[in-house]
Length: 423
Image 1 (cartoon, one colour):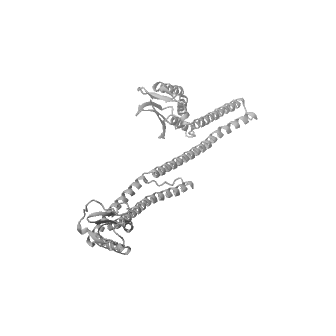
Image 2 (image 1 turned 90 degrees about the vertical axis):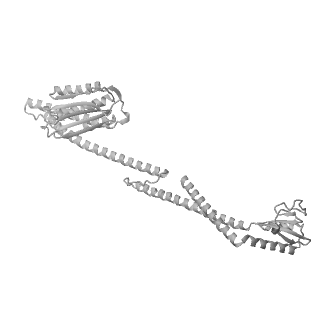
Image 3 (image 1 turned 180 degrees about the vertical axis):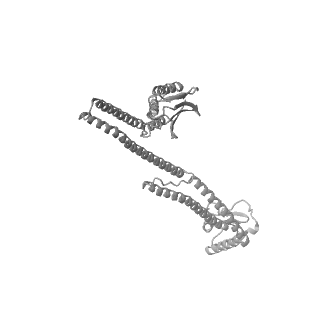
C-alpha cells in the first residue's frame, strides 16, 4: 500500500509539473502575441478616469481612491504630483494628502495624466491581469493531478479488494469441505503471506486427515487380522477343553495330547495378545515423550546382537556377523531398542531357513548407523501367515528415534535395514 501511495504521488506530481509547463508556455505565447496586458491596462485606466469624473474626487481623497483600487484585484495604483509620490495603493490607508519627499523613479511613458476635480496628477499602473489565468491554470492542474492520484490509488486498491474477495470465495469453498481446492497465491505483500499461510494450513490439515485415515484403516486391518489369528487357536483351545471336560478322549495318551495341545494354543494366544498390547503401547506413545540415553554404540550393539545370535545358534541357526570398528555414540531408549531386536529375531526364528546363513552387519555411513539383517525364507512354511504387527512396531520405535526401517522381501530373501542418527 505504501509503495502504491508513493507511486501514485510521483505520477501525480509528474503530471502536475508537465501540465504547469504546458499551461505556462501556452499562456506566455498568448499574452505576448495578443498584447493582452496593454489592452487591459488601457481599460483599467479608462475605468479609473470615469470613476474620478463621476464621483468628483479630489487628488487628496485617498479613501475614495482606495475604494476603487481595492476592487481591482490585479492592479497596483500610484499617483504622482510634481514628480513626488502622493498615493501608493500598497501603503496603509491615509486620511489626508501627505506628499512624499522622494523623487519619482519611473519612465515618463508609463505615467498617465488624470484630471481630478481640483487639479491634474499623474498615474502609474502596475497590472497583473495575466496572473489570474495562471492561477486558474494552476488550480486546474492541481485538480487534474489529484484526480490522477485518486484514479491510480483506486486502481491498486481495486486490485487488492478483488484479490481479497477471491480469497473469501476460496475460503468458503474450503469451509464447504473441499480441502483439495488450491488457494490462489500471487503478489509479494501481506496478502501473499496470508494466502500462503492458509494454503500451508490446508495442506497440513489434509495430511493430518490422511494420516488419521491411514491409521484408522491400519488399526481396522490389524484388529481384523488379530481377531482372525486369535479366533483360530481360541476355537481349537475351547474344543480341546470340551473334550477334556466331557471326557470324550479314549485313552490317557489322548488326554495328555489334548492337554499339551491346549497348552500350546494358550501360549499362542498369549503371544498374540502380548504383541497386540505392545503395538498399542508403542503407537500411543508420543515421539517427544520417549526418554533417550547415550551409549557406546559398539558395546551396545555387540551386546544386543550377540544375545539374539546366541539364542538362535542354540536353536540350530547359522550366522555371519560383521561389526563396525569405528567408535560412535548412540542416544536410544534401551527398552524400546531391545524390543525391536526381539521382534526381528523372533520372526527369524519362525520364518528363516536354518540351512542358510543369516547375515548380520552394522556400519557407519554419512553420520548414520546402518544395521542390516538378511535371511532366506523357509520354503516349507507356506501356510504360515503373519499380521506384520511386529514389523509395524519396529518401524514406529525407530521413527521415535529419528530413524527409519526398510524391509524388502523377494526371491525367498527377507531383508531388514535400520538407520539411526549417531552422535
